[in-house]
Image (cartoon, rainbow, N blue to C red; front, side, top):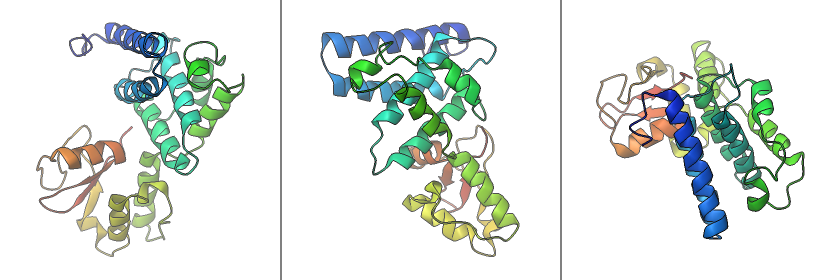
Length: 234
């Protein structure tokens, strides 16, 4: 039903809300599967947020669920890799909002009371301020998109690009950073064509693994021409 409603936005929003509420209720209260519910919440958040369905003119149930889910997932984030997870959550929220996230919209959409929804069942120790603090923590982390955009501006000016930015922490990111610091980087790296799932240099379609990397890390690395395409579109 969600797939069939791709071109009917109001119906799509409603179906995504139903999918979350029924899916979480079944896992938490029928199956008593907290780990399964947490995993389901993460998958749902990624799938729902990538569709760019935010509507700043009105408060929708979907908007509330998206920002509250981001806060819950942030509260779950492992301390050892917390920055990476928070950056990924902020990235997803930018996709939902089709651009920079309005903090007032985000905090205003949040279901603050942990007892409302699923937060208290997933994380019984949460207090009334925990979700807002978690969401604020997400919004303070610079997204991969903004990091890549800043890196390109620094490269264009011939200035040093910090290698400790989160976007450069993965093996793919480290490889990109190495190319950006070369004098001929413009021959190897360019801004990706918007909404294009192929190399922006030679136009070869990305295989599954490279496409997944492109969509998750915003860095496209072509297996044919070995060049990089950076997705810096909201």
